[in-house]
Amino acid sequence: MMKTKIFLAYLRSFAHMLIMLCVAAVGLVVVPVAVLCMTDNHLPRWAWWWGNDKDGDSDDGWRTVHYHDGAHTGFWPRFIWFAVRNPCYNFTKRYGAVRLAGRRFIVIESGDPYTTNRDSAFDGRGYSGTFRRVLVFDDGQVIPMYYHVRQWGDSGVCLRVLLGYKLMGRNIDGEYVEPVFNINPLMGFEV
Picture 1: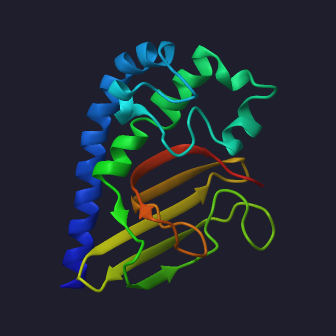
Picture 2: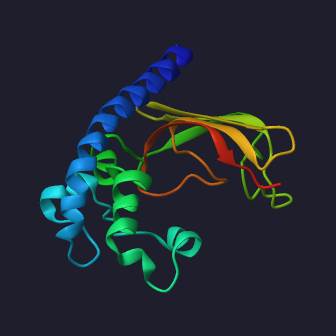
């Protein structure tokens, strides 16, 4: 029974990903116009699905790595942020996220919890492996995460697979957890 619930949860996240791809494709047309109409680092209300109520036109990590001295406020950086880096963020939060706040759940884990492509807890490097995490709520709802990282030889590149829901990190907290369906065969890997 539990395996069936986990499988169905993966199917739901995959279905959401297909819908999100359609919304993101429309965003490639909507976002450029919306960026020209921005106020206070947020897209206009009519483009809310493609906006980011949490971080506005970028977050601290993105600005630190990619832009300096306010360079993130131009047209191109904002287009990349809203249409490519965080496509349809608000849509995903509203229609795909699972509420955690105020709910009781148990956590089931298997595999290697140190699996990561960067900043492993024990030595600051990436670490190849597979890790699974499942949340089982009191009401019977199940949300899974499958995370796999495999470094390509000794390179700074890896295969990174993240499926299900964003249940990363040592602690699971926050108000919501979002669905994810990401397979990247050329993800950066800290060596």
